[in-house]
Amino acid sequence: MGSYEIVNAKGKTVMKNLRAVEILNEGKHIIGVKEDYTFELFDVQTGEKVPQESGLKAPLFLSRGNTFLILIQNGNYYVYDFELKKITKEGYREIKNPDGVRSSLLVKDENFNWGIIHIDGTVQIPPQYLSLDYGGGEMNGILYPVAHLFRASSRNSEPFYINLSNEVDLGATANSCCFVMGNQQVVGKRLMLLEQSGKLKGVEKTLLGTTYYSTSREYNNPAEAFNWLYQGWQEAPDSQYALVKLAEFLRSNPEFLQAQEGLNLSSLYRLAGKQSPSYLLELAEYFRWENQPDSARFYYEEVVKTTPQTSYTRVGAHIELAKMAFREGNKTLAAEHLNAAKRAASANQSPLPEYKLEELSEMNLATNLKYGQVILYKGEKFMVLHGTQKGVELSNGTYLPLTETDYKVLNESSDQFMTSCYACAGSGKVTKTFKMTPITVYSKPELVSGSTVSGDYIKTTSYTTPSSYEGQETCSVCYGKKVVLKR
Image (cartoon, rainbow, N blue to C red; front, side, top):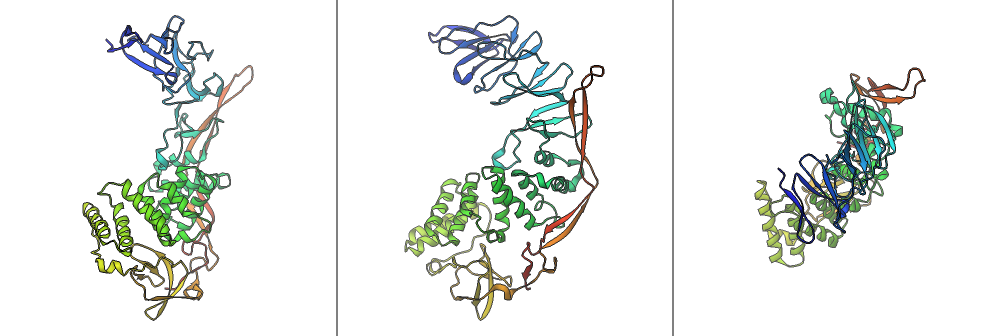
């Protein structure tokens, strides 16, 4: 027997031995379901039962935000309102639990085909699929967004994604395809997307960008990755997926921080910081290199506030805060930050350089050095590349220590350090050919109206990945700049 009961405002038990009790319709109604799935629905404000037809059962427990009920009558599923009046006049063999608040429902007809209806009963996609499921969660930008889509399958086909217009969603389908291809899975995604590159929008371009830095070195192309990732974020600035993927790429490929004029890194990392505190550290570093110490301090302190004491992300933040404190003459605070950095490093079994307080007091960080500047250092000229935790990387592969002040910025062009790119002969582009074994990604059924004699029938169209693709790419050696560093 059930163990739940419903008690009214006067403390009187109105239902007992229930298998379930649920609050529905944003708290306006409460339902008590018996062991045989018959039920009573109560209006919370009046405490009265809502009148119902005979033979109704409640098989599903819906989210309290939904404005409808899914009930069974005479073996068929219907959508009801909270006055227990039918919204859908046609019954279905099954209606799936929406598993959240939704306006579209998945329904199965008498022929065991799945389709989609609106909660008002309007048919959005006639039943024609072997199976249908709701798209799934977003995972804070980590996974490709499919919550607004539906995962479909038909006979002799891998699953694919459709939208409410019954169109195959190219990005989501490509992202889930090609698992049988082993190591060429990512290449399969790339070919499928490149074949339709003229139709790609927003996060679809982001997905294409990810295929250029997540395979083996033979197939990777950071320049092409950045081009697509940046376009995807520009076209879908509110997408967490586009934001996180671009931020992840820039963290591991810092040379592109200077590659795109107008790329607002402060906004990028500030937004990404909502997903992970490590992005706040990147944002602090950005402001440090832009010679904005107050903003840098704010985000270093945010890292300290939002991470556990044992987080390795805190190491860099504490070291920089120690430097700031010592430059301001606060040796006590500087020592506290250095000790905290050592504790965090030790907890992660990582070494920490033994900075001395005397060295910190003399540090004059080279925060104003920019990519492409020419400096004179120890009697030699070098081109500045980019800042790292080791120091400022120079054109000969060495690093200018962050503590170094004995250098001079020269008013000279960096062209003297460059030569024509050997990989693309100075054109900035290369012709690339990909080959692979074709695979059928999906077979999409479509309900077609037939004659009065033959009746309606289902027509199936298959999509197969191309066996090869040839096109021009940005040169992966010079990143399309036509020149490379002399080595």
